[in-house]
Image (cartoon, rainbow, N blue to C red; front, side, top):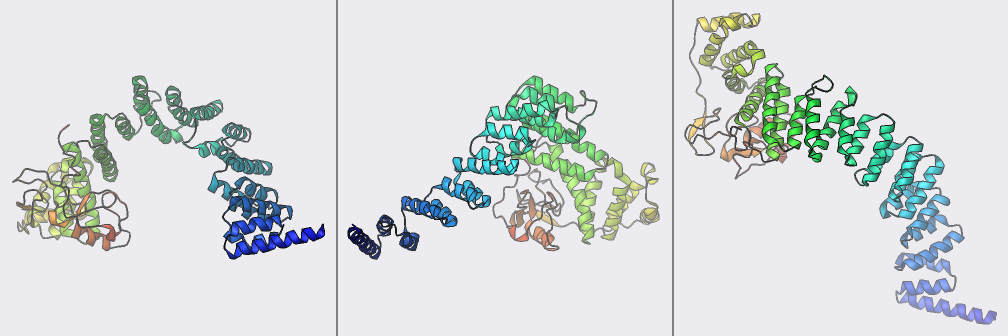
Length: 501
């Protein structure tokens, strides 16, 4: 009998070696395993392609207590559940088990990992892997028991059933948390309840609640909910009127673009009137962009107000860079619409006089100085400049450097660089966000972020003056290398076919 066994063992060995020589490694491994020659299987393991052989080898490694090797072989054999079990039970290596679950999305493996973390008292991780193993009810119960509902809600994200969201909403409702109740009733599509909670939040949560409330009303398409939210925004429910930008966002959500545009103009006017020029500029720009994204025609007044505010904001930048001529030209534009800046009439006119005089635009300096000395403004002049302004008016110097001319990008007619309406073709012209000048067809570029136009030569010069220089309009840092010369620009992309609405 032992002779037969020896003979069989010899035959196995010879057969396996022949298979190995012929590179038939799977067949060789199969024979080695019959002969229980696991050492030889290990030697050729890197050449094996059959998952079954890997799994058999892994089982033998586990019997022999070689758990790391067993884990690797189970994984190579695509037996992920056993690879995860080995890492948790024998190697106590949850990190590796988690990696396998995340890479393979093994449902049974995720369940094992969840059980492991639950036994450790790490309920957040246990909830995560219960969700992966599609056991949401267990995950919810665990979250409720151990005060981990925020974690559970975050894990299920947007990939859950309405029943899941309803359960979370009711959990928060029972605990008196209106913001969270509203958020999850919205996800569960119970819009009436969602809005009723979102308009009851404490003051520190109003901002987040309103963003969700606007989404709720936009999805619900119910007049009663729309009117309820408008009443809340107007302060009729709690006596506290909310920021007008929410009304704009509501109209946008409801696709009521005429009302949205009108609201944008009112908001910007309020900011402008009280002297919050940067706030007015940013609100108007943000709303302008939202209207453009929807392909909505921009009202002329809105386009004009943004241009004026942007021109005023550019002044400080150019003064800092000692480009006083450019600052003067921009201030002349602003001063010609001084009624739009009622809070700072005297200050703006004074700056205009000073910058014009400094730049050799003496006739313009005289003109605005004379305006400043009118009775209604005279008492508001800064004492530091009063004598200088009086002197400019007493001894008038009407010399003035001619403003440069450039061709209209539409018809080619020459017109002053700061003029934004062509007298020849009657078109309103796009302006450069760096200089305020009208654009030139052959020197066209745009900000890579907001895509507003800028004269390529001026934009490059502006950006390379200092590292991480932001776009003067959207305030996002721009890499000069990302700005390209555009050979065939869309002249009116940012005018949105401006017209009265």
